[in-house]
Image 1 (cartoon, rainbow over the protein chains, first blue to last red):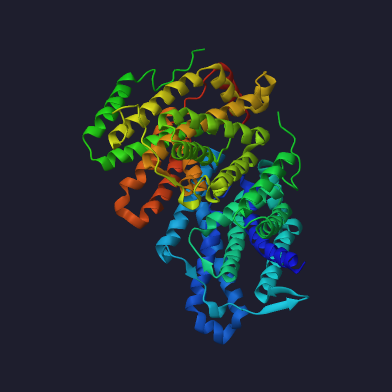
Image 2 (image 1 turned 90 degrees about the horizontal axis):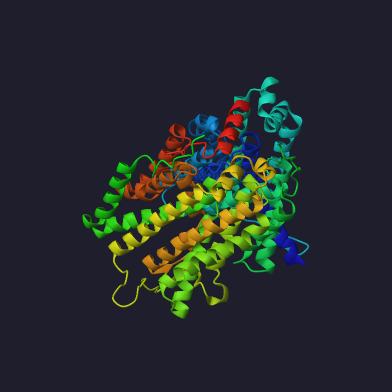
Length: 303
Length: 329
Protein backbone atom coordinates (compact mmCIF):
# COMPACT_ATOMS: atom_id res chain seq x y z
CA UNK A 1 0.00 0.00 0.00
CA UNK A 2 2.88 2.37 0.79
CA UNK A 3 4.17 1.93 -2.73
CA UNK A 4 0.86 3.10 -4.15
CA UNK A 5 0.95 6.24 -2.06
CA UNK A 6 4.57 6.89 -2.91
CA UNK A 7 3.78 6.50 -6.58
CA UNK A 8 0.80 8.80 -6.28
CA UNK A 9 2.93 11.44 -4.61
CA UNK A 10 5.62 11.07 -7.27
CA UNK A 11 2.88 11.29 -9.86
CA UNK A 12 1.47 14.44 -8.29
CA UNK A 13 4.91 16.02 -8.31
CA UNK A 14 5.41 15.35 -12.00
CA UNK A 15 1.79 16.17 -12.61
CA UNK A 16 2.18 19.57 -11.02
CA UNK A 17 5.06 20.26 -13.43
CA UNK A 18 2.84 19.33 -16.32
CA UNK A 19 0.01 21.39 -14.88
CA UNK A 20 2.11 24.53 -14.51
CA UNK A 21 3.41 24.24 -18.06
CA UNK A 22 -0.05 23.38 -19.33
CA UNK A 23 -1.42 26.61 -17.87
CA UNK A 24 0.85 28.57 -20.18
CA UNK A 25 -0.36 26.60 -23.18
CA UNK A 26 -3.94 26.92 -22.17
CA UNK A 27 -3.87 30.69 -21.65
CA UNK A 28 -2.28 31.30 -25.03
CA UNK A 29 -4.61 28.88 -26.70
CA UNK A 30 -7.67 30.38 -25.07
CA UNK A 31 -6.92 33.87 -26.29
CA UNK A 32 -5.11 33.34 -29.58
CA UNK A 33 -6.23 29.83 -30.59
CA UNK A 34 -2.55 29.15 -31.16
CA UNK A 35 -0.59 26.07 -30.08
CA UNK A 36 2.46 27.80 -28.70
CA UNK A 37 5.16 25.26 -29.50
CA UNK A 38 7.80 27.58 -28.09
CA UNK A 39 6.33 27.25 -24.61
CA UNK A 40 8.27 24.07 -23.84
CA UNK A 41 11.44 25.95 -24.67
CA UNK A 42 10.52 28.83 -22.37
CA UNK A 43 10.46 26.17 -19.70
CA UNK A 44 13.90 24.85 -20.69
CA UNK A 45 15.35 28.34 -20.85
CA UNK A 46 14.01 29.05 -17.36
CA UNK A 47 15.65 25.90 -16.13
CA UNK A 48 19.00 26.90 -17.62
CA UNK A 49 18.80 30.43 -16.24
CA UNK A 50 18.08 29.04 -12.77
CA UNK A 51 21.02 26.69 -13.19
CA UNK A 52 23.30 29.56 -14.15
CA UNK A 53 22.24 31.62 -11.15
CA UNK A 54 22.79 28.72 -8.78
CA UNK A 55 26.21 27.92 -10.23
CA UNK A 56 27.52 31.46 -10.25
CA UNK A 57 25.86 32.52 -7.05
CA UNK A 58 26.51 29.34 -5.12
CA UNK A 59 28.89 30.94 -2.58
CA UNK A 60 26.58 33.91 -2.05
CA UNK A 61 23.51 31.71 -1.73
CA UNK A 62 25.02 29.37 0.85
CA UNK A 63 26.14 32.27 3.04
CA UNK A 64 23.20 34.65 2.67
CA UNK A 65 20.07 32.82 1.57
CA UNK A 66 20.26 29.23 2.63
CA UNK A 67 19.09 26.41 0.42
CA UNK A 68 15.42 27.28 0.19
CA UNK A 69 16.16 30.95 -0.31
CA UNK A 70 18.45 30.03 -3.18
CA UNK A 71 15.74 27.96 -4.79
CA UNK A 72 13.19 30.74 -4.52
CA UNK A 73 15.69 33.32 -5.77
CA UNK A 74 16.52 31.16 -8.79
CA UNK A 75 12.84 30.68 -9.52
CA UNK A 76 12.06 34.37 -9.26
CA UNK A 77 14.97 35.42 -11.41
CA UNK A 78 14.18 32.84 -14.08
CA UNK A 79 10.55 33.93 -14.01
CA UNK A 80 11.43 37.59 -14.50
CA UNK A 81 13.81 36.88 -17.37
CA UNK A 82 11.32 34.61 -19.06
CA UNK A 83 8.48 37.10 -18.69
CA UNK A 84 10.64 39.47 -20.68
CA UNK A 85 11.66 36.86 -23.26
CA UNK A 86 8.08 35.66 -23.61
CA UNK A 87 6.90 39.14 -24.54
CA UNK A 88 9.87 39.55 -26.86
CA UNK A 89 9.14 36.30 -28.70
CA UNK A 90 5.49 37.26 -29.00
CA UNK A 91 6.39 40.66 -30.48
CA UNK A 92 8.90 39.27 -32.94
CA UNK A 93 7.51 35.92 -33.97
CA UNK A 94 3.76 35.98 -33.41
CA UNK A 95 2.38 39.50 -33.58
CA UNK A 96 3.19 40.12 -37.26
CA UNK A 97 1.53 36.83 -38.16
CA UNK A 98 -1.85 37.00 -36.37
CA UNK A 99 -3.67 38.61 -39.29
CA UNK A 100 -2.68 35.73 -41.57
CA UNK A 101 -4.60 33.16 -39.55
CA UNK A 102 -3.87 30.25 -37.31
CA UNK A 103 -1.79 27.84 -39.36
CA UNK A 104 1.04 30.22 -40.32
CA UNK A 105 1.27 31.08 -36.63
CA UNK A 106 1.80 27.38 -35.83
CA UNK A 107 4.76 27.25 -38.22
CA UNK A 108 6.11 30.45 -36.74
CA UNK A 109 5.76 28.97 -33.26
CA UNK A 110 7.70 25.91 -34.39
CA UNK A 111 10.33 28.24 -35.82
CA UNK A 112 10.52 30.12 -32.52
CA UNK A 113 10.87 26.80 -30.71
CA UNK A 114 13.77 25.77 -32.98
CA UNK A 115 15.45 29.15 -32.47
CA UNK A 116 15.15 29.03 -28.68
CA UNK A 117 16.26 25.43 -28.45
CA UNK A 118 19.32 26.02 -30.59
CA UNK A 119 20.13 29.27 -28.84
CA UNK A 120 20.22 27.31 -25.58
CA UNK A 121 22.43 24.71 -27.22
CA UNK A 122 24.81 27.37 -28.54
CA UNK A 123 25.02 29.19 -25.21
CA UNK A 124 25.21 26.31 -22.74
CA UNK A 125 26.49 23.55 -25.01
CA UNK A 126 24.80 20.39 -26.21
CA UNK A 127 25.62 18.25 -23.17
CA UNK A 128 23.55 17.60 -20.09
CA UNK A 129 24.00 20.10 -17.30
CA UNK A 130 23.72 19.07 -13.68
CA UNK A 131 22.26 21.31 -11.00
CA UNK A 132 24.84 21.82 -8.22
CA UNK A 133 24.12 19.01 -5.79
CA UNK A 134 25.14 20.89 -2.66
CA UNK A 135 22.50 23.54 -3.32
CA UNK A 136 19.68 21.06 -3.49
CA UNK A 137 18.01 20.24 -0.18
CA UNK A 138 18.25 16.52 0.39
CA UNK A 139 16.21 15.53 3.42
CA UNK A 140 14.07 12.43 3.46
CA UNK A 141 10.84 12.18 5.36
CA UNK A 142 9.13 9.07 6.53
CA UNK A 143 5.46 9.52 7.28
CA UNK A 144 3.55 6.34 8.13
CA UNK A 145 6.08 4.33 6.19
CA UNK A 146 5.78 6.51 3.10
CA UNK A 147 9.14 7.70 1.88
CA UNK A 148 9.21 11.18 0.40
CA UNK A 149 11.71 14.02 0.25
CA UNK A 150 11.21 17.46 1.69
CA UNK A 151 11.98 18.87 -1.74
CA UNK A 152 9.00 17.00 -3.12
CA UNK A 153 6.72 18.46 -0.47
CA UNK A 154 8.05 21.95 -1.14
CA UNK A 155 7.59 21.52 -4.87
CA UNK A 156 4.05 20.30 -4.40
CA UNK A 157 3.16 23.15 -2.05
CA UNK A 158 4.80 25.77 -4.28
CA UNK A 159 3.04 24.45 -7.37
CA UNK A 160 -0.32 24.46 -5.69
CA UNK A 161 0.28 27.98 -4.40
CA UNK A 162 1.25 29.13 -7.89
CA UNK A 163 -1.77 27.44 -9.41
CA UNK A 164 -3.94 28.99 -6.73
CA UNK A 165 -2.55 32.46 -7.44
CA UNK A 166 -3.11 32.04 -11.14
CA UNK A 167 -6.61 30.73 -10.56
CA UNK A 168 -7.33 33.73 -8.37
CA UNK A 169 -5.96 36.14 -10.98
CA UNK A 170 -7.98 34.57 -13.76
CA UNK A 171 -11.24 34.13 -11.88
CA UNK A 172 -11.38 37.05 -9.47
CA UNK A 173 -9.47 40.04 -10.79
CA UNK A 174 -10.27 42.52 -13.53
CA UNK A 175 -7.25 41.32 -15.51
CA UNK A 176 -8.56 37.79 -15.37
CA UNK A 177 -12.01 38.87 -16.45
CA UNK A 178 -10.42 40.65 -19.42
CA UNK A 179 -8.55 37.50 -20.39
CA UNK A 180 -11.63 35.36 -20.11
CA UNK A 181 -13.70 37.82 -22.08
CA UNK A 182 -11.10 37.99 -24.84
CA UNK A 183 -10.94 34.21 -24.97
CA UNK A 184 -14.71 34.04 -25.39
CA UNK A 185 -15.04 36.67 -28.07
CA UNK A 186 -12.17 38.86 -29.08
CA UNK A 187 -14.12 41.41 -31.09
CA UNK A 188 -16.85 42.00 -28.57
CA UNK A 189 -14.29 42.24 -25.79
CA UNK A 190 -12.44 44.92 -27.75
CA UNK A 191 -15.69 46.82 -28.18
CA UNK A 192 -16.18 46.71 -24.43
CA UNK A 193 -12.92 48.57 -24.01
CA UNK A 194 -10.59 45.66 -23.32
CA UNK A 195 -7.18 46.28 -24.79
CA UNK A 196 -6.34 43.15 -26.76
CA UNK A 197 -2.64 43.92 -26.81
CA UNK A 198 -2.56 44.29 -23.04
CA UNK A 199 -4.23 40.92 -22.65
CA UNK A 200 -1.63 39.34 -24.90
CA UNK A 201 1.14 41.08 -23.01
CA UNK A 202 -0.27 39.73 -19.80
CA UNK A 203 -0.55 36.10 -20.91
CA UNK A 204 2.91 36.17 -22.48
CA UNK A 205 4.45 37.38 -19.23
CA UNK A 206 2.49 35.08 -16.95
CA UNK A 207 2.73 31.86 -18.98
CA UNK A 208 6.49 31.88 -19.59
CA UNK A 209 7.12 33.02 -16.00
CA UNK A 210 5.22 30.01 -14.69
CA UNK A 211 7.06 27.81 -17.18
CA UNK A 212 10.41 29.16 -15.99
CA UNK A 213 9.61 28.48 -12.34
CA UNK A 214 8.63 24.97 -13.30
CA UNK A 215 11.93 24.67 -15.14
CA UNK A 216 13.87 25.47 -11.99
CA UNK A 217 11.79 23.02 -9.97
CA UNK A 218 12.36 20.28 -12.55
CA UNK A 219 16.07 21.00 -12.46
CA UNK A 220 16.03 20.69 -8.68
CA UNK A 221 13.98 17.51 -8.76
CA UNK A 222 15.81 15.59 -11.49
CA UNK A 223 19.13 17.46 -11.09
CA UNK A 224 19.84 17.08 -14.76
CA UNK A 225 18.71 19.29 -17.59
CA UNK A 226 19.22 19.15 -21.33
CA UNK A 227 18.41 21.60 -24.06
CA UNK A 228 15.89 19.27 -25.69
CA UNK A 229 13.84 18.52 -22.59
CA UNK A 230 11.31 21.25 -23.35
CA UNK A 231 10.11 19.24 -26.31
CA UNK A 232 9.11 16.27 -24.16
CA UNK A 233 7.61 18.29 -21.31
CA UNK A 234 5.87 20.53 -23.79
CA UNK A 235 4.29 17.55 -25.48
CA UNK A 236 3.09 16.12 -22.18
CA UNK A 237 1.81 19.48 -21.00
CA UNK A 238 -0.01 20.00 -24.26
CA UNK A 239 -1.54 16.56 -23.80
CA UNK A 240 -2.63 17.64 -20.33
CA UNK A 241 -4.17 20.80 -21.74
CA UNK A 242 -6.24 18.81 -24.21
CA UNK A 243 -7.12 16.19 -21.62
CA UNK A 244 -8.61 18.88 -19.41
CA UNK A 245 -10.36 20.65 -22.24
CA UNK A 246 -8.40 23.19 -24.20
CA UNK A 247 -8.58 26.81 -23.07
CA UNK A 248 -10.05 25.74 -19.73
CA UNK A 249 -7.57 26.66 -16.97
CA UNK A 250 -8.79 24.52 -14.07
CA UNK A 251 -9.10 21.75 -16.66
CA UNK A 252 -5.46 22.17 -17.60
CA UNK A 253 -4.40 21.94 -13.94
CA UNK A 254 -6.39 18.78 -13.34
CA UNK A 255 -5.32 17.39 -16.70
CA UNK A 256 -1.68 17.81 -15.71
CA UNK A 257 -2.12 16.22 -12.29
CA UNK A 258 -4.11 13.31 -13.70
CA UNK A 259 -1.52 12.78 -16.41
CA UNK A 260 1.34 12.72 -13.90
CA UNK A 261 -0.40 10.25 -11.61
CA UNK A 262 -1.41 8.00 -14.50
CA UNK A 263 2.12 8.05 -15.82
CA UNK A 264 3.62 7.04 -12.48
CA UNK A 265 1.03 4.35 -11.81
CA UNK A 266 1.49 3.07 -15.35
CA UNK A 267 5.23 2.96 -14.82
CA UNK A 268 4.85 1.11 -11.53
CA UNK A 269 2.14 -1.39 -12.41
CA UNK A 270 2.28 -1.88 -16.16
CA UNK A 271 5.79 -1.24 -17.41
CA UNK A 272 8.06 1.73 -17.28
CA UNK A 273 8.96 1.33 -20.94
CA UNK A 274 5.32 1.47 -21.98
CA UNK A 275 4.21 4.26 -19.63
CA UNK A 276 4.04 6.94 -22.32
CA UNK A 277 2.11 4.61 -24.60
CA UNK A 278 -0.30 4.11 -21.70
CA UNK A 279 -0.65 7.88 -21.24
CA UNK A 280 -1.37 8.53 -24.90
CA UNK A 281 -3.81 5.60 -25.04
CA UNK A 282 -5.76 7.11 -22.14
CA UNK A 283 -5.75 10.46 -23.90
CA UNK A 284 -7.09 8.96 -27.11
CA UNK A 285 -9.74 6.98 -25.24
CA UNK A 286 -10.85 10.08 -23.33
CA UNK A 287 -11.11 12.06 -26.55
CA UNK A 288 -13.06 9.32 -28.31
CA UNK A 289 -15.71 9.41 -25.62
CA UNK A 290 -15.46 13.06 -24.60
CA UNK A 291 -14.33 14.92 -27.71
CA UNK A 292 -13.95 18.21 -25.84
CA UNK A 293 -11.74 16.90 -23.05
CA UNK A 294 -12.64 15.95 -19.50
CA UNK A 295 -13.81 19.39 -18.41
CA UNK A 296 -14.45 21.02 -21.76
CA UNK A 297 -17.83 22.47 -22.46
CA UNK A 298 -19.64 21.31 -25.51
CA UNK A 299 -19.44 23.99 -28.13
CA UNK A 300 -22.39 24.19 -30.47
CA UNK A 301 -21.47 23.92 -34.12
CA UNK A 302 -21.82 27.19 -35.91
CA UNK A 303 -23.46 27.07 -39.29
CA UNK B 1 -17.28 29.61 -64.84
CA UNK B 2 -13.95 28.41 -66.11
CA UNK B 3 -12.52 25.20 -64.71
CA UNK B 4 -9.40 25.70 -62.67
CA UNK B 5 -6.19 25.25 -64.56
CA UNK B 6 -3.71 23.40 -62.43
CA UNK B 7 -1.06 25.96 -63.29
CA UNK B 8 1.84 23.63 -62.95
CA UNK B 9 0.87 21.60 -65.97
CA UNK B 10 -1.52 23.93 -67.68
CA UNK B 11 0.10 27.22 -68.47
CA UNK B 12 3.80 26.94 -67.83
CA UNK B 13 4.89 24.06 -69.99
CA UNK B 14 8.21 25.60 -70.91
CA UNK B 15 9.22 26.06 -67.28
CA UNK B 16 8.05 22.57 -66.50
CA UNK B 17 10.16 21.01 -69.23
CA UNK B 18 13.16 23.01 -68.08
CA UNK B 19 12.73 21.77 -64.49
CA UNK B 20 12.31 18.16 -65.58
CA UNK B 21 15.36 18.51 -67.81
CA UNK B 22 17.46 19.82 -64.93
CA UNK B 23 16.30 16.98 -62.73
CA UNK B 24 17.22 14.38 -65.37
CA UNK B 25 20.73 15.67 -66.11
CA UNK B 26 21.56 16.89 -62.59
CA UNK B 27 22.90 13.59 -61.19
CA UNK B 28 25.35 13.15 -64.08
CA UNK B 29 27.25 16.28 -63.11
CA UNK B 30 27.59 16.10 -59.35
CA UNK B 31 29.17 13.81 -56.78
CA UNK B 32 27.32 11.01 -55.01
CA UNK B 33 26.88 13.18 -51.94
CA UNK B 34 24.80 15.71 -53.84
CA UNK B 35 22.83 12.94 -55.50
CA UNK B 36 21.97 11.63 -52.05
CA UNK B 37 20.92 15.11 -50.95
CA UNK B 38 18.59 15.21 -53.94
CA UNK B 39 17.36 11.73 -53.06
CA UNK B 40 16.32 12.90 -49.60
CA UNK B 41 14.70 15.92 -51.19
CA UNK B 42 12.66 13.37 -53.15
CA UNK B 43 11.72 11.44 -50.00
CA UNK B 44 10.57 14.65 -48.32
CA UNK B 45 8.70 15.66 -51.45
CA UNK B 46 6.83 12.35 -51.38
CA UNK B 47 6.11 12.68 -47.66
CA UNK B 48 5.03 16.28 -48.14
CA UNK B 49 2.68 15.25 -50.92
CA UNK B 50 1.24 12.51 -48.73
CA UNK B 51 0.63 14.87 -45.81
CA UNK B 52 -0.72 17.43 -48.22
CA UNK B 53 -3.65 15.14 -48.99
CA UNK B 54 -4.68 15.15 -45.34
CA UNK B 55 -3.63 18.66 -44.32
CA UNK B 56 -3.75 20.61 -47.55
CA UNK B 57 -6.72 19.10 -49.34
CA UNK B 58 -9.00 18.27 -46.42
CA UNK B 59 -7.61 20.61 -43.77
CA UNK B 60 -7.17 17.94 -41.09
CA UNK B 61 -4.34 18.70 -38.66
CA UNK B 62 -2.14 15.66 -38.74
CA UNK B 63 0.99 15.99 -36.58
CA UNK B 64 1.64 12.27 -36.44
CA UNK B 65 2.34 11.57 -40.06
CA UNK B 66 5.77 10.12 -39.28
CA UNK B 67 3.84 7.23 -37.71
CA UNK B 68 2.50 6.13 -41.09
CA UNK B 69 5.95 6.60 -42.60
CA UNK B 70 7.34 4.37 -39.83
CA UNK B 71 4.74 1.67 -40.47
CA UNK B 72 5.73 1.58 -44.14
CA UNK B 73 9.45 1.48 -43.37
CA UNK B 74 9.15 -1.20 -40.69
CA UNK B 75 6.80 -3.34 -42.78
CA UNK B 76 9.45 -3.40 -45.45
CA UNK B 77 12.30 -3.93 -43.02
CA UNK B 78 10.70 -6.76 -41.08
CA UNK B 79 9.21 -8.67 -43.99
CA UNK B 80 12.41 -8.32 -45.98
CA UNK B 81 14.83 -9.40 -43.26
CA UNK B 82 12.68 -12.13 -41.67
CA UNK B 83 10.99 -13.60 -44.72
CA UNK B 84 13.25 -12.44 -47.53
CA UNK B 85 10.47 -10.91 -49.61
CA UNK B 86 11.96 -8.61 -52.30
CA UNK B 87 11.75 -4.85 -51.69
CA UNK B 88 9.81 -4.05 -54.83
CA UNK B 89 7.13 -6.58 -53.94
CA UNK B 90 6.97 -4.93 -50.54
CA UNK B 91 6.41 -1.50 -52.06
CA UNK B 92 2.65 -2.01 -52.48
CA UNK B 93 2.56 -4.13 -49.33
CA UNK B 94 4.00 -1.24 -47.29
CA UNK B 95 1.52 1.14 -48.84
CA UNK B 96 -1.38 -1.16 -48.06
CA UNK B 97 -0.26 -1.87 -44.50
CA UNK B 98 0.18 1.85 -43.76
CA UNK B 99 -3.23 2.48 -45.31
CA UNK B 100 -4.89 -0.25 -43.25
CA UNK B 101 -3.17 1.05 -40.12
CA UNK B 102 -4.47 4.54 -40.88
CA UNK B 103 -7.97 3.16 -41.40
CA UNK B 104 -7.97 1.27 -38.10
CA UNK B 105 -6.45 4.09 -36.07
CA UNK B 106 -8.35 6.95 -37.62
CA UNK B 107 -11.84 5.41 -37.75
CA UNK B 108 -12.61 6.07 -34.09
CA UNK B 109 -11.05 9.55 -33.99
CA UNK B 110 -12.12 10.99 -37.30
CA UNK B 111 -15.01 12.92 -35.71
CA UNK B 112 -12.61 15.04 -33.64
CA UNK B 113 -12.12 18.62 -34.68
CA UNK B 114 -9.11 20.83 -35.24
CA UNK B 115 -6.67 20.73 -32.39
CA UNK B 116 -8.21 17.70 -30.73
CA UNK B 117 -7.51 15.71 -33.88
CA UNK B 118 -4.06 17.24 -33.87
CA UNK B 119 -3.16 15.97 -30.40
CA UNK B 120 -4.62 12.54 -31.10
CA UNK B 121 -2.48 12.19 -34.22
CA UNK B 122 0.53 13.33 -32.16
CA UNK B 123 -0.35 10.62 -29.65
CA UNK B 124 -0.72 8.07 -32.41
CA UNK B 125 2.70 8.94 -33.85
CA UNK B 126 4.30 8.77 -30.42
CA UNK B 127 2.66 5.43 -29.66
CA UNK B 128 4.06 4.00 -32.90
CA UNK B 129 7.54 5.29 -32.12
CA UNK B 130 7.51 4.09 -28.50
CA UNK B 131 6.15 0.72 -29.56
CA UNK B 132 9.00 0.37 -32.03
CA UNK B 133 11.52 1.21 -29.32
CA UNK B 134 10.00 -1.35 -26.96
CA UNK B 135 10.49 -4.14 -29.44
CA UNK B 136 7.14 -5.99 -29.34
CA UNK B 137 7.42 -9.74 -30.15
CA UNK B 138 11.11 -9.20 -30.86
CA UNK B 139 10.24 -7.86 -34.31
CA UNK B 140 11.40 -4.26 -34.39
CA UNK B 141 14.85 -4.60 -32.82
CA UNK B 142 14.25 -1.95 -30.16
CA UNK B 143 16.22 1.29 -30.27
CA UNK B 144 18.74 -0.20 -32.69
CA UNK B 145 16.09 -0.94 -35.26
CA UNK B 146 16.29 -3.42 -38.11
CA UNK B 147 19.28 -3.61 -40.41
CA UNK B 148 20.56 -5.56 -43.41
CA UNK B 149 17.69 -4.65 -45.68
CA UNK B 150 18.11 -5.64 -49.34
CA UNK B 151 18.42 -3.43 -52.38
CA UNK B 152 15.39 -3.30 -54.64
CA UNK B 153 15.90 -5.73 -57.49
CA UNK B 154 14.07 -6.26 -60.76
CA UNK B 155 15.55 -9.74 -61.00
CA UNK B 156 18.83 -10.76 -62.55
CA UNK B 157 21.40 -8.00 -62.95
CA UNK B 158 18.89 -5.17 -62.61
CA UNK B 159 19.49 -4.16 -59.02
CA UNK B 160 19.05 -0.65 -57.68
CA UNK B 161 22.13 -0.21 -55.56
CA UNK B 162 23.80 3.07 -56.48
CA UNK B 163 22.92 6.62 -55.49
CA UNK B 164 21.97 7.58 -59.00
CA UNK B 165 19.58 4.67 -59.41
CA UNK B 166 17.92 5.45 -56.11
CA UNK B 167 17.65 9.06 -57.20
CA UNK B 168 15.75 8.07 -60.31
CA UNK B 169 13.61 5.54 -58.42
CA UNK B 170 12.38 8.11 -55.91
CA UNK B 171 11.84 10.87 -58.42
CA UNK B 172 9.94 8.61 -60.82
CA UNK B 173 7.66 7.70 -57.94
CA UNK B 174 7.30 11.38 -57.00
CA UNK B 175 6.36 12.27 -60.58
CA UNK B 176 3.84 9.42 -60.76
CA UNK B 177 2.33 10.54 -57.45
CA UNK B 178 2.13 14.13 -58.66
CA UNK B 179 0.27 13.04 -61.78
CA UNK B 180 -2.07 10.94 -59.66
CA UNK B 181 -2.64 13.76 -57.19
CA UNK B 182 -3.43 16.29 -59.90
CA UNK B 183 -5.97 13.86 -61.30
CA UNK B 184 -7.37 13.47 -57.79
CA UNK B 185 -7.54 17.24 -57.20
CA UNK B 186 -9.74 17.65 -60.23
CA UNK B 187 -11.93 14.68 -59.52
CA UNK B 188 -15.13 14.30 -57.58
CA UNK B 189 -13.06 13.18 -54.59
CA UNK B 190 -10.79 16.24 -54.73
CA UNK B 191 -13.75 18.59 -54.93
CA UNK B 192 -15.40 16.85 -52.00
CA UNK B 193 -12.18 17.20 -49.99
CA UNK B 194 -11.90 20.89 -50.74
CA UNK B 195 -15.51 21.47 -49.78
CA UNK B 196 -14.91 19.76 -46.45
CA UNK B 197 -11.87 21.94 -45.89
CA UNK B 198 -13.79 25.12 -46.61
CA UNK B 199 -16.86 24.28 -44.59
CA UNK B 200 -17.48 20.89 -43.16
CA UNK B 201 -21.09 21.46 -42.20
CA UNK B 202 -22.03 22.90 -45.56
CA UNK B 203 -20.28 19.96 -47.21
CA UNK B 204 -22.26 17.51 -45.11
CA UNK B 205 -25.47 19.37 -45.88
CA UNK B 206 -24.73 19.13 -49.61
CA UNK B 207 -24.66 15.36 -49.41
CA UNK B 208 -20.93 14.74 -49.08
CA UNK B 209 -20.18 11.84 -46.78
CA UNK B 210 -17.74 13.80 -44.59
CA UNK B 211 -16.57 10.85 -42.55
CA UNK B 212 -15.91 8.69 -45.59
CA UNK B 213 -13.93 11.34 -47.44
CA UNK B 214 -11.86 12.27 -44.39
CA UNK B 215 -10.96 8.63 -43.83
CA UNK B 216 -10.17 8.24 -47.51
CA UNK B 217 -7.74 11.15 -47.28
CA UNK B 218 -6.03 9.61 -44.27
CA UNK B 219 -5.77 6.21 -45.94
CA UNK B 220 -4.39 7.56 -49.22
CA UNK B 221 -2.01 9.90 -47.41
CA UNK B 222 -0.78 7.10 -45.16
CA UNK B 223 -0.33 4.74 -48.11
CA UNK B 224 1.85 7.28 -49.91
CA UNK B 225 3.87 7.80 -46.73
CA UNK B 226 4.23 4.01 -46.56
CA UNK B 227 5.73 4.03 -50.07
CA UNK B 228 8.22 6.66 -48.92
CA UNK B 229 9.03 4.49 -45.91
CA UNK B 230 9.71 1.51 -48.15
CA UNK B 231 12.22 3.35 -50.29
CA UNK B 232 13.81 5.05 -47.30
CA UNK B 233 14.33 1.69 -45.57
CA UNK B 234 15.99 0.10 -48.58
CA UNK B 235 18.15 3.14 -49.26
CA UNK B 236 19.53 3.32 -45.73
CA UNK B 237 19.49 -0.49 -45.44
CA UNK B 238 18.44 0.06 -41.84
CA UNK B 239 15.57 1.67 -39.96
CA UNK B 240 15.51 2.88 -36.39
CA UNK B 241 12.79 4.53 -34.31
CA UNK B 242 14.49 7.90 -34.01
CA UNK B 243 13.93 8.59 -37.71
CA UNK B 244 10.20 8.75 -37.05
CA UNK B 245 9.96 11.12 -34.13
CA UNK B 246 7.48 13.91 -33.44
CA UNK B 247 10.11 16.26 -34.82
CA UNK B 248 9.84 14.54 -38.20
CA UNK B 249 6.07 15.00 -38.19
CA UNK B 250 6.54 18.68 -37.39
CA UNK B 251 8.92 19.07 -40.29
CA UNK B 252 6.39 17.46 -42.64
CA UNK B 253 3.77 19.85 -41.31
CA UNK B 254 6.13 22.73 -42.11
CA UNK B 255 6.74 21.45 -45.65
CA UNK B 256 3.04 21.74 -46.40
CA UNK B 257 2.58 25.13 -44.75
CA UNK B 258 5.78 26.70 -46.05
CA UNK B 259 5.01 25.52 -49.56
CA UNK B 260 1.34 26.38 -49.57
CA UNK B 261 -1.54 24.18 -48.53
CA UNK B 262 -2.91 22.08 -51.35
CA UNK B 263 -0.41 23.38 -53.87
CA UNK B 264 1.77 20.70 -55.46
CA UNK B 265 4.57 22.98 -56.72
CA UNK B 266 4.47 24.60 -53.29
CA UNK B 267 5.03 21.23 -51.59
CA UNK B 268 8.10 20.64 -53.75
CA UNK B 269 9.49 24.03 -52.71
CA UNK B 270 8.71 23.31 -49.06
CA UNK B 271 10.41 19.92 -49.29
CA UNK B 272 13.41 21.56 -50.93
CA UNK B 273 13.59 24.07 -48.09
CA UNK B 274 13.39 21.46 -45.33
CA UNK B 275 15.82 19.01 -46.93
CA UNK B 276 18.30 21.30 -48.68
CA UNK B 277 18.54 24.17 -46.21
CA UNK B 278 20.44 22.26 -43.50
CA UNK B 279 22.83 20.96 -46.18
CA UNK B 280 23.50 24.36 -47.70
CA UNK B 281 24.09 25.93 -44.29
CA UNK B 282 26.37 23.15 -43.10
CA UNK B 283 29.36 25.55 -42.82
CA UNK B 284 27.50 27.40 -40.08
CA UNK B 285 27.54 24.23 -38.00
CA UNK B 286 25.96 25.01 -34.62
CA UNK B 287 24.13 28.06 -35.86
CA UNK B 288 22.49 26.34 -38.78
CA UNK B 289 19.28 25.30 -37.04
CA UNK B 290 19.10 28.72 -35.41
CA UNK B 291 19.08 30.28 -38.86
CA UNK B 292 16.61 27.65 -40.01
CA UNK B 293 14.14 28.62 -37.30
CA UNK B 294 14.55 32.33 -38.03
CA UNK B 295 13.94 31.76 -41.73
CA UNK B 296 10.80 29.80 -40.88
CA UNK B 297 9.46 32.75 -38.89
CA UNK B 298 10.43 35.23 -41.61
CA UNK B 299 8.78 33.13 -44.31
CA UNK B 300 5.52 33.09 -42.41
CA UNK B 301 5.78 36.84 -41.91
CA UNK B 302 6.20 37.61 -45.57
CA UNK B 303 4.38 34.72 -47.24
CA UNK B 304 1.82 33.48 -44.74
CA UNK B 305 -0.03 31.53 -47.41
CA UNK B 306 3.11 29.66 -48.40
CA UNK B 307 5.72 30.28 -51.05
CA UNK B 308 3.52 29.09 -53.88
CA UNK B 309 -0.06 29.15 -52.66
CA UNK B 310 -2.72 27.30 -54.55
CA UNK B 311 -5.03 29.44 -56.56
CA UNK B 312 -8.34 29.66 -54.78
CA UNK B 313 -11.56 28.79 -56.44
CA UNK B 314 -11.02 25.25 -57.66
CA UNK B 315 -14.68 24.80 -58.31
CA UNK B 316 -17.62 27.07 -58.57
CA UNK B 317 -18.91 25.97 -55.20
CA UNK B 318 -15.69 26.49 -53.27
CA UNK B 319 -14.99 29.88 -54.80
CA UNK B 320 -18.53 30.98 -54.04
CA UNK B 321 -18.07 29.84 -50.48
CA UNK B 322 -14.79 31.66 -50.04
CA UNK B 323 -16.32 34.82 -51.49
CA UNK B 324 -19.13 34.63 -48.96
CA UNK B 325 -16.54 34.10 -46.25
CA UNK B 326 -14.66 37.20 -47.34
CA UNK B 327 -17.80 39.26 -47.19
CA UNK B 328 -18.47 37.99 -43.68
CA UNK B 329 -15.02 38.79 -42.41
